[in-house]
Length: 235
Image 1 (cartoon, rainbow, N blue to C red):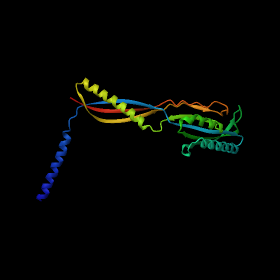
Image 2: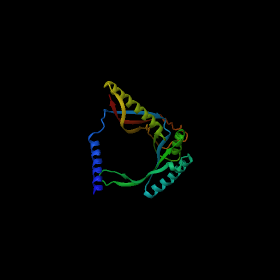
Image 3: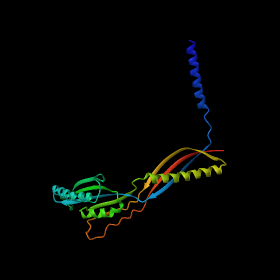
Image 4: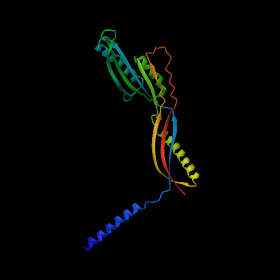
């Protein structure tokens, strides 16, 4: 019985110590919440475009057959342009009727339209204009894009993050100085980011073989990091 009593007393002592710690938390200084953003830019090195073939015929089977033949030529041209298979993906296939609308009568189907579109990632920006020309020459009658991006964004994000952190630190120092205090530490940090991607849009029909090459101006892509920080100030 004595052993049991001693163990019980020891347990109660531990609980009292833990509860006492909750009742007397460590004192904190003044907390200040600051939001800051940073930006960094780099020339994009990847372009995403979509290319496709639209064919029309009086019956659906012929529309699809003609489309398949033309699309096969387009895929061969994409491969010949040096685009890896992993960077080419079908994004849509559709077949829809074409109607003739006349007043006073029910719409009549006059033919069918077949469409096949692929998404393409171009990793060599200097070849983008030539790739666009090759697609048009191979029979692509729908081309959309490009969407430009940075292939390895983390180094650029790190620069933007550093800029945001320096801004927040400077603001915290200003608050501390105004209050005759000093910055003790950062209590918490949360991050959000967004990518501002320039998206010059282009839509092309069949290009003449003797036309000038398609010009592309990549410009720069800007990445933004937003930080929310809580600083602790002390006397």
